[in-house]
Length: 437
Image (tube, rainbow, N blue to C red; front, side, top):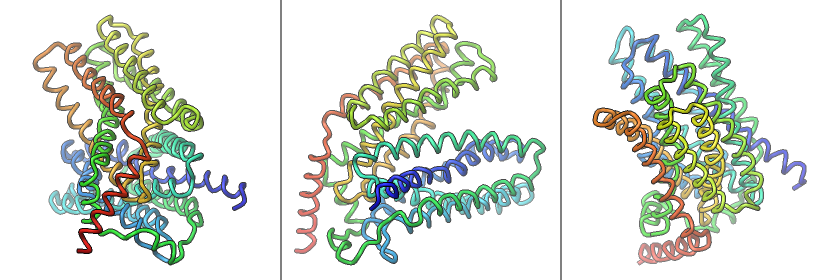
């Protein structure tokens, strides 16, 4: 392949994330607020509906989709049908959310049941598309460019979310139900147009002899293969604890600024600017230089810097120092930039020739971690504030995050791609031998 065409396609592959950046921003910010405030739907119902997306990961959608994309070919393509099919399902179901939500004002239960179905379908499409998208990155980018594509795609998703939020705030300044429905339908069309234009034509068609290079596994055989591999289970736990460390603080950071330092809403909304800007910068830098830094070194460095940042955060609370608080946020962002990209590249690299299956498993562990961080840290905050002073309560919360970073740092040296591939091969041979008897 012409090198210019190859690098042009790498750019296209990275730009796909814009599609889900648009949808995700509206879902978690605009729609979340409108359903709770303007439509008066109870917050726990709204949170539960949006949380169905992660529930689909718990139920194995990522592993199912990834395994199918490993063994199934549609017109000679493995990943593309799932990436684009999942995006189409997500976009169509996303455009149906607003009308169903409006229906709840007149017929609560009919609207709620309809929303449960819509969010369930959305979650299936969302995870099927993104799981096989990361498998396609692994297939196409190659080891040298894997980290660059992963870093750029993540940064683009975050930046797209920011721009989408600004656009929605301007468009919905004079809010009406009709304007929200129009905005979500338009966003769905834009997401599909961008996604299809970025992915179509990237994947090489697989001939029949390519498909026979690997033994096809059923879903149950895939689960059994995972269960018989100690390294696989240990790495899944490693991903869980690493992602929990990286994202567990998100819902408690702004309340910390209010409860401990007495900052206003206007002040705490600036937290994202400090933390997010440094994180994005170092995600890009890590992605482009990780081949020199090393995956494990990137993770360990990021964990250490983030830990220092959380210790500084404790110091800011104790000393009531706002300047130290902002310095801590920048430090945490730098650390997260290193370890986030390090862990993403590590996940995508650990596939033992069955990219879809294992990326589906690692993605499931990631979803569980993010869900646990949102629910667990929020619940722990509520409990601790009832039994301890605010600074003590948040100090314990930050200590939990630091402990998670420490466990991640201790675990990362034990893993190697070579050992994982060897154990996966042996486990597969034993399982197939038993199945043939």
